[in-house]
Image (tube, rainbow, N blue to C red):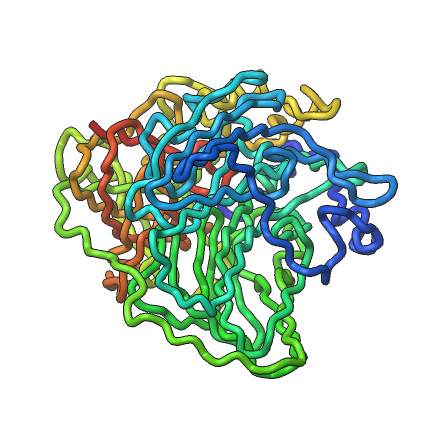
Length: 588
């Protein structure tokens, strides 16, 4: 669906907009800047490390604790509080372990709606993945227990994953970092490490989290208050010449981070699945929702310098009225050099990690991402040849119509382009709207989860059912689909075998970007193809679990599921996932 169709549909009353006014817009930047919040302070305060989840175990190699998601008030000033939902009352908490450690976490649900904990990027047994069908009811608890296997070192994260109410929980701030250390760190001790969790918020004038608007559901929610480790524009003071290791998580629901650091190059040394083999020099880096990046920066030798790490505008195919922040630079972190001696450059190992090619696939699949608005069946098929092509490979592995794929990044994490141009002028091809699975839910509901969200969509602190109904009312009648189907609980799209190399061709047959995420494993981006281009092999490999696809772009990725079970794959724009762009592969 293009912008023109979206606006026409909205004018006809097909979309119900939220009545709540965003704090960052309606209350103005001046109002925000005039506050002195304790945990969301004024910009320019020193960068704080992530608050830790306490390890209650006294046994070496075992992390034992509890996570208690629930409502918490965060002071924004003398007379105003932000009402968020947090794990253990902490903004962006950290769990730190090592490969081989045992994790034993009990989730105690203090929310008024069901929730789970999904361990994003960690190769866990399927029963520990925190998927929607294992949701924990309000007031109930659930134990997550597993061991971090060899090769799991890297920066991962954890967040809820119920269906139907997930967008509300992410918007309220539920997320944390999970750092898995290797047995031996290859980087020199002189490298100064900082973990950076980037999130965003939109608050109403009374400090409550503002309900979703129709534009949030269509595009993915972008809160106007951008935070790093729960702080607004924090400051990092370092000696000139310091080598920084900046390890980032994009924990936003829909915001893309097009990262640049004034007067500096970025050196990529790791992605979602850990270290890559050799450093890659970048002028900028595109970090999509759900992705992580491990960057090295040798700071300028200039004393008393001021350098800004910021997210620059990125065109990802916005639909509806365009908020002004999309065209503005979003400051993230200010790096200040002290008036002190210059630190010498740090020599890196010749090889950082090892990414062995997976080899030739025994199964080939085709996956197509589309958006469909009911009653508008006259979409141009655009660049797509999907929907008419049979599944390749084993005949019993899905049997769905789908399409090939591509991706323009190098190994999934290269320099971002200057922008794709105006994606809004392109239209998405329909994908067989009738095949929505067995639940027969209303449009935009995403199957079972939408009805379930009506039952348990109550917000905290007196908002209750009114907030849940408001969230549901704001959902447009648009489906985001995978292979022509919206997600339905219990429905399986593909079937596969544990230990078998698979090659997936993923085709973004729509006018907007989609970050594609796979549970239960990591993949390698093998080749990319732009909308009207030829296939190009990736110049280097990385382990990824989330990768971006620009409009009408295709990627080939290879992966192996080591553990049996039902594994999800979906768009990691949270609202698109909620509106149906998610599916399941059953691995036996």
